[in-house]
Image (cartoon, rainbow, N blue to C red; front, top):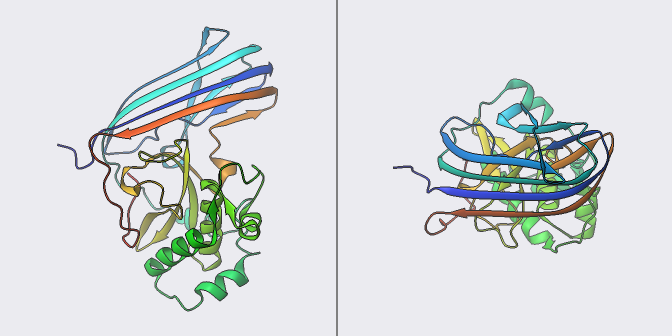
Length: 272
């Protein structure tokens, strides 16, 4: 019997392809030892099937790429039933450098003075994770539609509100400013309300990567990794590289068998 209840997720995306190019989707559950995934992925353009190429990146991130799809109405449908729990991701030396640096949406250098003022007295990395998550959760108000897709951690800090990716970017920037490597992870999140793709931070402490979520909107132990990167620039669920698309809509579901588990924000949790 699995230590983690069965999780079931779906994602449906529509868009109009107006000019052929390269379209990249990141919606599939990431490959990870310990998970058993029964899934289907279909993509059509004007109801005709098209076949993407799958490319697997770091931490099992799966890119589904369409090269020069025809002009028309594109629909993607993904579903997966997931059993088991992912093993802790491997820690690579270069990641501890890459994820300690400022990035486009996590301007840790600009927020260094804030991080020093608020957390300069905290030396224990595990304690720092809880303190940053609690501070971000208290500093920000979760307001749907309150931020722009190009807003970074500095914008979020000044605005005082945002959505999950904004919370995650601010957490990441503050942790990096205190010399803790941190990265963004796009996830499926059973229990999330309103339901959507979710974004959390992952920070390196005690020899491994641990989940930090300032929103506290879903139990961390039930989250399923989709994509991992420096910030949201690396984890978009849809991206057009050349050509032209007009986004339609996305619908996401994520449920867990039985009751949702409790989540103690003071405990270290790995993404599984």
